[in-house]
Length: 320
Image (cartoon, rainbow, N blue to C red; front, top):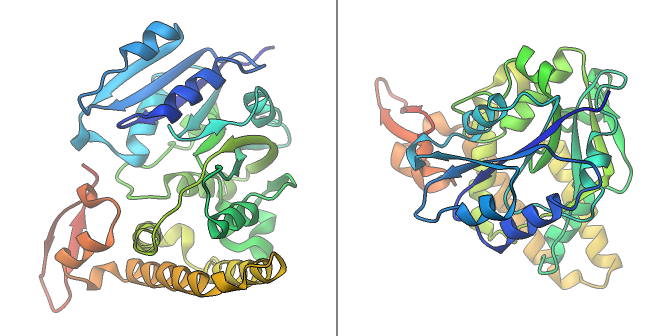
């Protein structure tokens, strides 16, 4: 029986990449039933998209109501498709077989989620270009709880920049958690692994997606990532994390030498230091004053208020 497929895309201040994304989704070899755009209102309408593509559904939300996990979950629960594909507005399918390759293994051998390979854009910096290759190699992989000792935290890696989910299992396990600052995809992936399911990395399913973050932006991103881990010790405590970062630094340094770019080592060490500092600050965010936290984060709207009941500053937060 042919499975129905819907695509969920959070949208905020769309640019040309969203146009490219929708165009290439319309050319997929495997039919997409609906594309649900969760549009954070910014004064720009999406009427043009609905006029051009009849299978597009737009759900407008207020900026203060946006939630990394909750907004995606709302879109998924608007659908009754067999398979849900989550994407970001800046992830552009590399070819017409993205959806077919991404969803091929879903439902086989306990595979309940699958994620795509992310290729660097043309303007991608050499350091980020290698990071894409490190995190998204050309070889496919299926991960389960048996891989926790070997892969550590990467067992839970399943980026919803482009990922497919069996909707029935998603709903049974409660889906993406609301009120998360970051990592809603990994938190849900951990639920899958802990429930006995597997996750497939599909190297033949490819999207073009990369960022040239500054050192401070990398600090902020890793800060938010660590906050999400600190808030979910039931998932991340005891799972190896920092060792994977060190492996990336060593591999990147070797690549810079081999490719004739040893002068970029200084940039690598600066960026790696910013990532590590952001990660450590995020792990201990409860010790920081609220004003400092708001400077460290990429998501200032997530943080609402803080108070100091004892010697330490306790920060109360929520998305919105």
